[in-house]
Length: 539
Image 1 (spheres, rainbow, N blue to C red):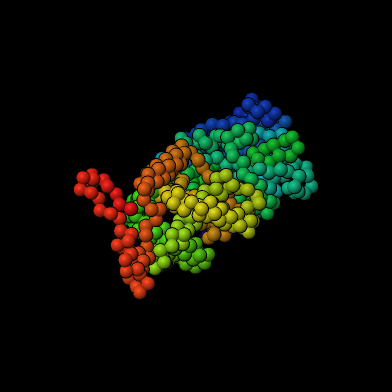
Image 2: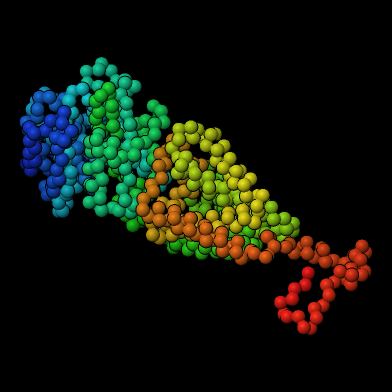
């Protein structure tokens, strides 16, 4: 293990629980066969560093129970012995141990790992089971305790990894996890809500099997190899409660639930909220301005829109390709992608100036809108489908959606181009707003990037969290799209679908030896009589 664990173990191994505060719990009224009275649950405020948990009057029909301790931020140590022997204790914020003795009393010891003057609120839970129920974590292979009913979480900028151990059947000679069905569940907390009340309220929703089935969202099974090492796409600042239910015949049991926000709660502003650096604020402001611009005026200012779209295309493709190599830093990838995007936009302006073929230039907008549509589709409707965990299936399907968008848009280039840039501009506006007011809309594209850059992300659980703020932003996206298309189509009434190319106009107006000498005299329209009004139009 790491040095921190070794240090903590050496220090805490000599802690004595000789003088500590008692918590006495009488389980005489609790029956493992009664769903209403199979769980003891109570909040305590700890003011001392050491606490003894004295459990009495355990019924004879209790096969085993799981004692759980939940705290908000501070790590605590739960032990079954007075001395912290290896394998007899667990450290964390969502921890638990299994008791399976024949005695009708049990002792556990709780200690705070740091000296603080403030009281600590804990949620103490005891879940009772009979001898036929599967034991959560009974087939432990790698965790520190002999039986591990708890889960371990770790996170980075992209994913949350939740680890657990297979359950066991009491009396079974060996561990055959194929006999026991294991289902994973998770529950999203309110976005950017890090209050203690919300934390414990949602934890209580995932304590028992009945509560988990009622409130949790089941995680699709992706095979035995990844069952106990699940990866979840991280929506930073949106907390998740993770739970596991084990089933054997007609018996069920629940693991100790655990919570992760995908960030450091002690550094909420810096780690959990939207980027606060100046360059990110500037980027979001530009995204908002240019998104609104191309949504409502993009086709009118065709060349500027062409540069914005081609710049975005070059930036996106370059960033995705570079991200396949892990040794490049974020700064290096960003600078390279912006540089390539800058010159890529110039190249496409030169192509338009030289050839003036609309189908070449509008295809970029169709590709980008198809990319966004595919990202939206595979992060919502088609998310977490087992067949799409195969990368070949996923990317073939992804490219098919892009190709379909191009095929649909090309026959009606004017309407297709206006719809594409309004779709892209509206999303850019909503994504920029998400950085300021909260929301998960940017993750529509971020998850696609993760599929390219993050190892094993094909097995990650996407399950896009659509909460109230996300629904409002989705409706705003739709309204901006509809108004953008309406305004731009209305402006195009009576005008050519695309601006004429300067080089083509000059070539047609150039006089050569084949130009008829009397061309203008023969085909020139007559001058209007003086009595005609000023709205006279020549053809």
